[in-house]
Length: 205
Image (cartoon, rainbow, N blue to C red; front, top):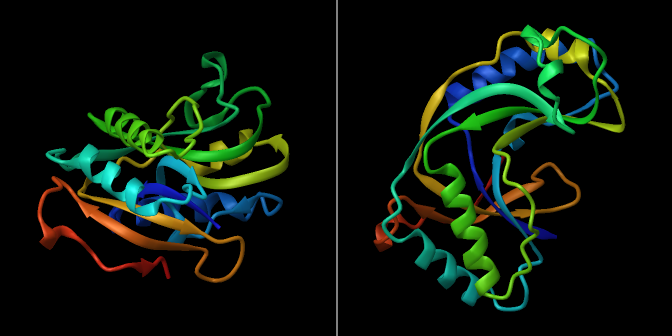
């Protein structure tokens, strides 16, 4: 089992994504589509989070003190590896593009700063957070091995633009299998600073 820090999309954002996915998934059954209840934006991967969870929790709380809630919005479709600019044709048209992940982007002022702050706090608590560029996204589908996803991007249609107020940071436990793969074990409200903002642990289903 491993841990990560995440934001959950709003119901409106999830509904918009679901409509787009319904239009595309029947033409790409070979992709492994992420269930809607598992859609999330990862802020930092924590792995097993070391052997001092209390130290990690305290470090994260210090990083969150006074941080405001974020105004977020869904952005364009993209993939890993990401498409070069010359392949970003309207609604996914264009030359072949092979990828292993299809995702919806997320934008919002302060999002990158929040992710960087939490990663640094976790490292200070002894958690070896991977050093990788932060690309805010919600994973929709995976392909193993990578395949051409040009038609999938086209069938997803125009990217949704739903916005929402992200005012909860979730510490999520990831389990390898089972109907409740992701389980929130701790939640911090934004701005952090009072006991009343702490939510009980919960699952995603």
